[in-house]
Length: 405
View (cartoon, rainbow, N blue to C red):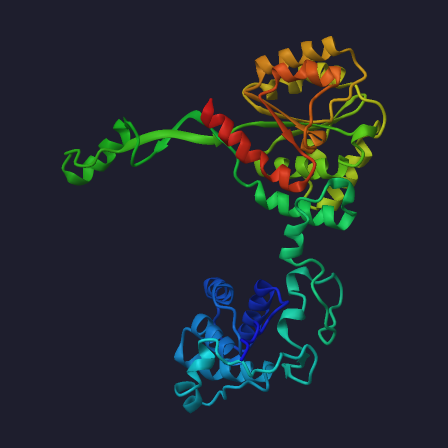
């Protein structure tokens, strides 16, 4: 006899667990985030092959108190109306243990539309949009809808080239990028704070604590240097040759602005500062305002002129000791010797210079343009930046370079 397949073959387990936990909270069952995470891990570790296995996986991970058993059983019976395991106490104590171990092969498939209802809501919980991502306005609870993008589908587009993404996919990946760039390489500052493993002994704190022990310094208070995120400056090319990557690079600049308080600049034939515009709370508003400010987008390219303008401006001080990210394909209308001179000045001022080139992701890529060849001697890292997955690997590469240096 063939073994039955998983009970939830095409269901996003995280969405199912969150929705089911929300239903339990509505019934008065206290389900926390840790219990919901345990339920998701149980579904991943041992995919349920029957309703009985699903019942025990949910009960063991989500129910923590004896008085909540009756409410849990009532909700489970309402959602999965034809469960193989009855929900009376005797059945719970003497249920089909083979089904619990995943041997219940005779379980029928779960219906996606039926007459089961909980508190007036029709259908099963995992095909219902969570309240936090529901559309603005009046929400019709009687209408079933599938989430627009599941996490598994979103992860599948990480390695998709920018030119093959639509506006909605780029927006969702941009939000993911904002959450993924929370950690950035740090630097040692001149400030000190109390640290158990510090090398310095602070006399003031040690003397203050010695007052409790008759002025005998029983415990030495040590301090260590405070680590701060290294300053980041981002310059992205928005010329015609970078039209397919412009939106994605704007999402990168916004993510770095929010996560590391970076200085963001866009350039084509002139330099435009976008730090204030990209710091807006709304991503759509930030991108619209940034697009309006860049008046020379999708035109020519003057990388050397824009770099010289930044170095000569009052924002040039932000380059000292900073990680400078330059996103461009290397096509430049200025002479290569002028770009080399600007890059040499930039390299002396910055801590690390990283060039993000969307063409570098092509197998066998060799920088043959004269401007790119002139800039490479002053670049610490040349990284491909043709997908959102490549952008997510930038902080790891920067941290690896910092460890080597």
